Image (cartoon, rainbow, N blue to C red; front, top):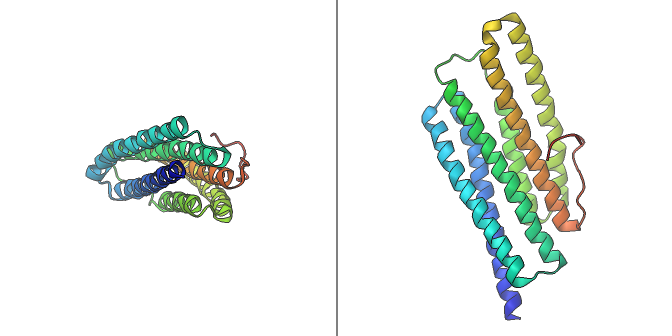
Length: 225
């Protein structure tokens, strides 16, 4: 009985660490877009520093998961929970990496006038951040319905992404001098689209944890894992 109680306590610690890491990832997305909109290089540099903190969380959670597997020999349901945590932290760390990628581009464009108002890119960022938030909420509540809704929102992000591509291509055709910045904005949009894909991945792992089935919930089946 004591062994089970200790194991449950360790699982709860793992659960809380995942929530903390998720909050840091959400903050990274938000700060990235604030830095981009305001051309705030100081904030952009801080995002790099915060990325190291998120990396540390990933290593900390990974170590806890491996210790639980080695020492506690968890059964099927518990092993699913630990396996889900390992998969989730990988996706969250990659989201943070993309935030740092956008911060790097923000620094490169800090002294430039933007070729267009930033409207759809911040909308993509808000959607991606909301998807991450609800994916973590689905994990906390073990709610398959919330996870499914997160995956449904991936289509909205994809639609914005393709709209941004078309718009920027039109701008580049009209004025070749915009090519460099337009390309940077395309990279930013792609990073945000990938963030949404990773939020979808997290939701799919939440469903796996709750049901034992790992299925692709998003309609866009060709996305990279």
